[in-house]
Amino acid sequence: MLEVKDIVVRYGRREVIHELSLSVADGEVVTLIGSNGAGKTTTLKSISGLLRPVSGSIVFDGERIDTMQPHDIIARGVVQVPEGRLLFPDMSVGEHIELGGVRARSGGRTYSERVDWVHEMFPILLERRDQKAGTLSGGQQQMLAIARGLMANPRCLMLDEPSLGLAPIMVDLLADTIRSLHEAGITILLVEQRVDLALRLAHRGYVLETGRVVLEERAEVLLEDPRVKAAYLGA
Amino acid sequence: MQRYFPLVAIAAAIVLPLLTANTYFHHLLVLWMLFSLLALSLNVIIGYIGELSFGHAAFFGIGAYVAAILGMHTGLPGVVELILAAAIAGLFGLVIGYVALRIVGPQFAILTLGFGSIIYTITNYWVDVTRGPMGISNIQPLSVSGDFLALTGALGYYYVTLFFVVAFAYACYALMSSRTGRAFIATRENAPLASSLGIDVFRMKLLGFVVATAVAGIGGALYAHYLTVVTPDVMSLQYMAALIIMVIVGGRGTIAGPIIGALIYVGLLEALRAVGPLRLVIFAALLTLSVIFLPGGIVSLWKKWFGDAETGEPAREGGAS
Image 1 (cartoon, each protein chain N blue to C red):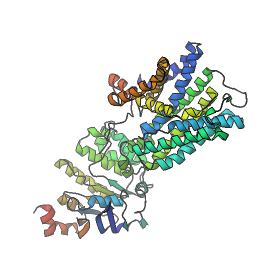
Image 2 (tube, rainbow over the protein chains, first blue to last red):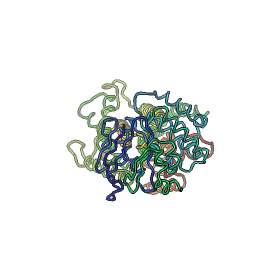
Image 3 (tube, each protein chain N blue to C red):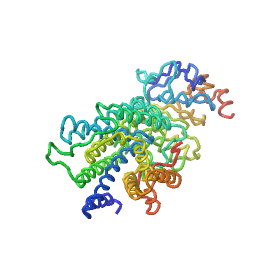
Image 4 (cartoon, rainbow over the protein chains, first blue to last red):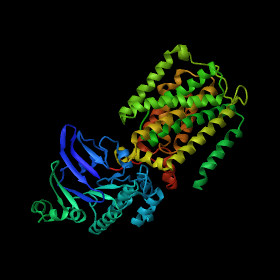
């Protein structure tokens, strides 16, 4: 479904992603793990069109998206939920949900069906409709960020560090949410610092180090891999 | 009560000129409405797309000159002239916006200043078309066709301009309550984030810019017909500054703000007539004080005293980060 092939990404003259390739099949949950600065967020930003690779290609559903504008990529169903929520603090919860639907993939649920869908998934957002996003708790903000992403009617949802700064109970809720999104048929590309959590949710994982894929395996195998254990699981 | 405030304001505006037969007062009211229309249109750029434009008076001037030149050579009906003034000013806005909106912040402001100055200079020196610094006089009154329904007195212009102000204010209100309006606010608050949500930031900004310039063109055409004379001075730095002062002092990003700002400007301009050019110093001081002590403009006082009434006030610098 999503095929990233040999992309090279630079910030200015500094090359941060070196010929990175990865693929995500339809209906799969794939995770990217790696330490800070390994290039996980950069990879997601390249897929969503916020950064442009200098070489290589990104193909979604047989169509090259690496030369497209971000809004055109979203219209094809590739949607990123940014790291650290990134909400507009003075906009209300309801306005964020509307905002997420400004540019959406056609087909599937209609706009009002999606509004009902995200409210059903996160009832608290309906309750807090008129509250400013800046006044929500961290967990509620993350729910809102995901709801906003879902309003674009994604086929492939990219979640960047969704558990960042969340209370343990919220992390469990988040994991349930990701599972149910997967069951709803959404393909998920997950970047997560909590490697144990990510590998329990995912089918496959890629380990990134300084802008390269150093390991690609099924999640169960990675969980047992001594290198992964030593580096990321603290065992 | 809040809900009825706009209706009360419109009713007051309709009755206001009938309270006196003083034509000087009527003249001031027309100026107020004309400046309100211009300030509201500039507010789309400053308040909604969050960029500072120093070129807005140039589009006002383009509208005025389109009306004047068309009136001189063709004798088209006034309604058609208004539409053409809007279209031509909007076309200039499209071309200039297409180039200038690729950059943001201070650089954008400087670029619009440059474009404004170019248009001003061309108007001043292209004597064959614009008659240069002499300007164009004897512009015919606004009419539906020929002498039919020709507007002669200030009162007529007041109501026509009031109509445009109310219509445009309502359009702004409707826009900002819509999903497109959310996209505007998102673009203003945090453009990179907006683009990651699938908003075409450049197109959003261009749309706002073209609408603002087209409305400024209508304002210019009404102005030319009303004063029956237009000179390149309408594009001068003084007017550019005046429009910015109205929007900022009144309250950017709101609908009442620019209208109140225009009232303050017109009022002070008359009240301070005795001090002559010193008025400009006073206006500059007003702008400076407003930016420092009242960044939300006069309308934010209302909010402070009467609770959370106005919506759409620009957030503190920074937005989401």
